[in-house]
Amino acid sequence: MPKAASDLFAHQPSPRSDGRLPVRITYLELKPLDWTRRGLPPDLDVTLDWVEAPTVALYRELYDRVGRPWLWYERRLLSDDALAALLAAPGHELHIARHDGALVGYFELQGDEIVFFGLMLDYIGRRIGPWLLDRAIERAFTCESARVILNTNTLDHPKALDTYRKAGFQPVRSETRELQDPRVLWPEVYRWPPA
Image 1 (cartoon, rainbow, N blue to C red):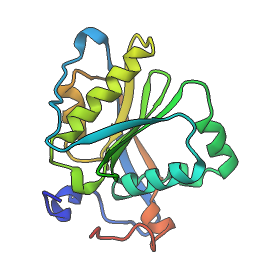
Image 2: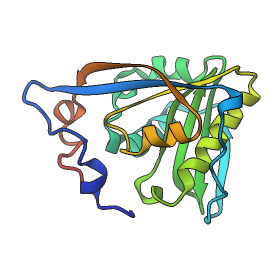
Image 3: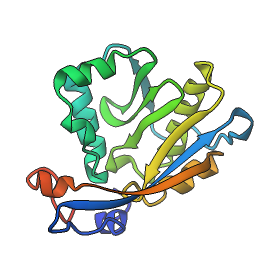
Image 4: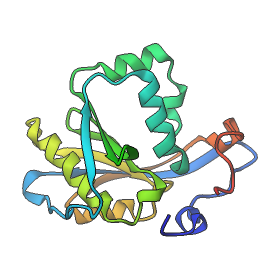
């Protein structure tokens, strides 16, 4: 990993005794004429595969491996049946990036929304993120979307918002919320401080 974990996660607040986690969520949108392609092909041989019928087990593994450092947890709360229905919904797509068989990251689309987008920690800082973001945007526009939407929050990578803005995304609104803190819900899974 190019940066020490303490650098990547220094912006995440320590767990609170009440189990609440304050976040600021920024909602963004991108119109085709505003898109700035930024992603040069990575130096690594990264393949990108569209998984047309993902299993619940595969999805849970991806979501956990990529999202745990950024405290993603809400899909963990879904039952297998609810998650299977979400994965089979019309307009849902899952695209997985790999290098020599190893998981690099993934993006998930639902209609015109990039629902989840992320990289494994070992691949952060290697210029793969902008390239993968371009692939997600390209795919969303291929599906006849007039715009692409996504959101990010203050727990995500500290450069996430800047990366999206450099691609042409414009903030349309933001809100502050308090979520359940997964580090309090599952302390054996979401260790603090991160290693």
